[in-house]
Amino acid sequence: MEINLFFEPVDPEIYQPDDDAPRKRIGDLIQVYSKHGNFPDLKDTDIAIVGVSEDRMSTDNYGSGKAPDVIRKHLYRLFRNGNRLNIADLGNIPRGHSIEDTYFALSSVTEQLLSSNILPVILGGSQDLTYAQYKGYGNLGQIINLLVVDPMFDLGKHDDALTSGSFLSKIILHQPNYLFNYTNLGYQSYYVDPDAVRLMQKLYFDAYRIGNVRNDMEEVEPIVRNSDMLSIDISAVRFADAPGNNNATPNGFYGEEICRIMRYAGISDKLTSVGIYEYNPSLDIREQTAKLIAQMIWYFIEGYYKRTKDYPVKENEDFLKFLVRIKDQVDEIVFYKSRKSERWWMEIPVESDLKERYERHYMVPCSFHDYKIACENNIPERWWQFYQKLV
Image (cartoon, rainbow, N blue to C red; front, side, top):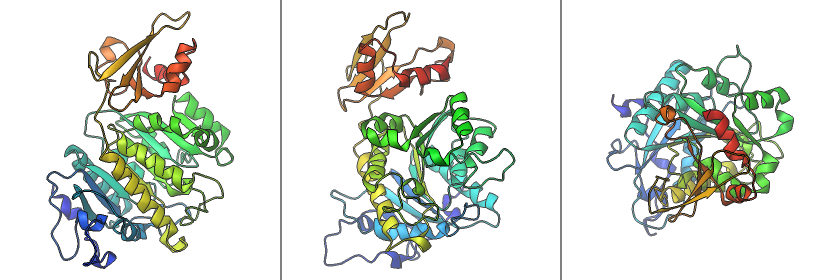
């Protein structure tokens, strides 16, 4: 399948380089599929920017389909120290004849990029596109972890159509199911039915309230590091920092905090796709939200090129191994610390016949704080959460 058939080129008027200035802006350093050029050569490409001009199933935020080019305008103008980036902007997937056509195009593009070890950064469009992003993993033969930054769970009702407010239930019910874990980061309790919180617990999914997250942003890094796929609803950022969304509210992440989350995503060796959704240019004030999203992508790129490719493997001299015995527990808790990055993991015991199926999941990213909890003769909550999933 020729991937270029799914795309429309970017308008070259979006970015006009300054011929008198050093060519160190992102727009100068990446390949762009424009009306005056050829489709990018994807050989040796690390990251592909994919715009999607689709918003038919947006919940009270129609207009987000025009987001990709406005984001590009500000992304291309940002400076980047260093040589040419191995990044290609593939252009925009247009609205299909039906919404299913758009989903098919995005899932096909995502699958092909992932199969080529290219990380897609998807610029939506409405957040129901997360479903198509997820389907792109369907033929890779692995179960995955999904991280969603969102003030709500977007479960909808059982019989609801697929929209930006119900995509999660469609992912959970999708067959074949290749979702191992779902994590919500930053939900706001007054927007979430308590029954939905109890459902998350019953399914052994993870949900973190905005207040708890913001109190200790260091603990967000292991959560992001354990994810394969990231979907961000820009309404998770407070209105003062990101007004370009009809569902924006007074509370949420600060701009600096969402950029920090994106940097964590960049440095994660496990994470393989990112989608940023629900930006509505028609509601933006002086394009402040577009500028913030451009900076979010900048931080992601910065993190990506600092990946250390460290993952704990037994008998690997790049890792320190720590054994912590908990009173009244048969098994010790095994921790690993990377000598390269000083990041931590803990090993969850799993039956030998299940190790192959869960080989990407029983080594769980954690923090030094988890190790300290274990040393105080307590089982870390993060260990217990994943133990329940694996037994």
